[in-house]
Length: 106
Image (cartoon, rainbow, N blue to C red; front, side, top):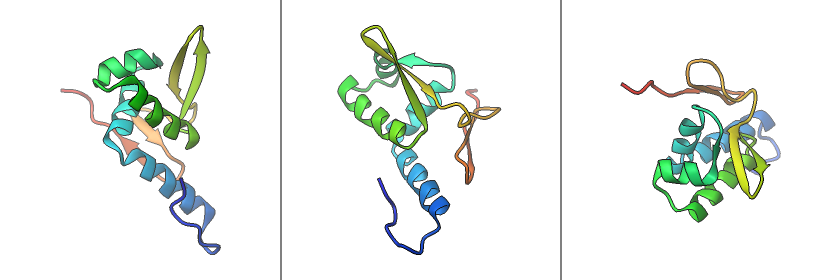
């Protein structure tokens, strides 16, 4: 996923824009927020978000490709977690160029 293929674009700005573009999808953003509570298997995450597992797997792949998530084999299942260094304090994602904060549930 590339936002710009311009040879004059700052690579860090393009990387940041790509990450923000990936997070602009509501399902992907909800998945990242849910994973802030800790690692989850894809089935658990699909149930929590009320999304078909096949559709969610597509979204999780995009987030992995952007370096925002890690996937670990756990038997036949896959365990997803936020990439170390991306999750900051106080329910914040550190994207390198900016921070994205989630409000605490009331």
